[in-house]
Length: 264
Image (tube, rainbow, N blue to C red; front, side, top):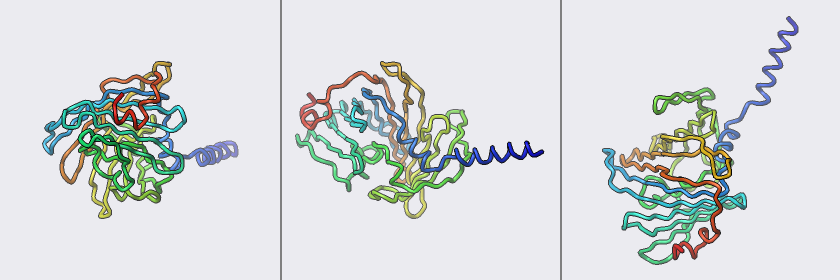
């Protein structure tokens, strides 16, 4: 009997020691190691409230994390109305990320101010804030459900459901968000965004993801299709990864304002 009780107490203590806090879970979800280099071809479809595609875009994306901080470039190739629009975003340690945009109609590159980052990303339902991962330390995180379930495409996932309320860098388009984080991959499968009236205003749905290999054989989780729904307007945006190459070195020139200006 004493031995049984000792085993039970050991299990309880072990569970307590190794239990993850919501902040730790969110931190893991935003620090999943990306490839050292990435080149992807994306399609971005803008949809109306009836789900009809109103604009189809092709975007080339380049990523680099040699310094440990991620730099990303988006180069819009079509349609003609936004062709050659290029955006560079660079992570910074202990301060806000830098973002620049080249507008071909003005033939100039300008810095995107922090106050603009909650605005639409080139007319889509994504905002500039959505295009980068928000550090866990900027929010206060609490469990809604430690043993939740989320079903998509006919498959049920075990998830943590966590509420995240901004406490730093509050220049956001929402008051808080609720994340459904997959326990296997640590990837958020669903994010719900709420305003100060507790009204849900937006959803970001991960429609498809899988584990893939880079050119060096290293494995990564690839978010292959994501849908963002604006619940106030009914408009939607879907981004799909059509092609990808991971860990093949990319020239530093892509991550300069000169390349934004010239595309060369």
